Length: 292
Image 1 (cartoon, one colour):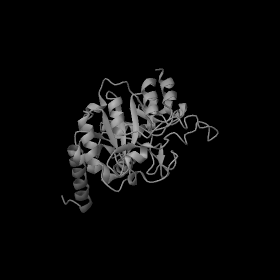
Image 2: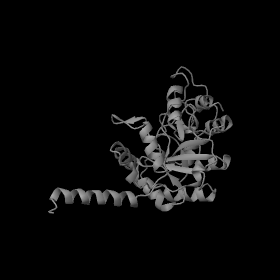
Image 3: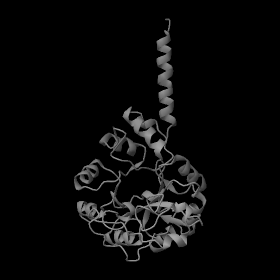
Image 4: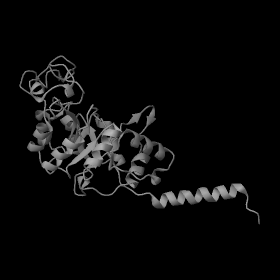
């Protein structure tokens, strides 16, 4: 019997599909996602920026006292090599100063009022202004909260922070307590090469590839180089968060931690879908939702 060309192509395609499926691997287990944790994790975005001045020691302390599971923060480096915590690349939006963090020394940064522009009511009042709240350093947070889990996002900088960041994690023995994130693939890849023992979430391009593969029902072929998907509800007109997405991620042993979820209704919906954590400016609301 003569085999037709289309039959050969079909057989080759089927063989490749089976080969890909057999050679693909889920993410391995990592101590950061210990089985005995109280899931879903309450992840305080910037320490809870909707409740207190974000990225400050006050916010982190209050979040810990509230009982959150994870402190989330953003990493920059000063001109003299100190790792500091702030969401933006400049100090303009949140402090009484002006300038790019990477062009300032730690002495200059520490002179700023880190709570100067934080307001709970759209600018009507500034209750923490002038109370001596400073920009926090990563070392201060490691020193104060050695038992806490932390999600630390590497922000965009001109120079790499991978080596001093990894050195500080190792110095304070935080390898199993830290999850590193970044929107910038090259910065995250640098960190992974420098500090392979520390868990990371997906970078922007990795997230995009996985989302598109799950939309095409091909998530089972993906071999992740990360442990978590920290994703928005939707991006670029594409709905990211769906029950099917959560299921596909879990099939690859990936945690799903959507951001930045601040309302009770969405929190309850995602919890019902089985997310592993929620990144929120309002950890107080999520704690109430969970009855903790």
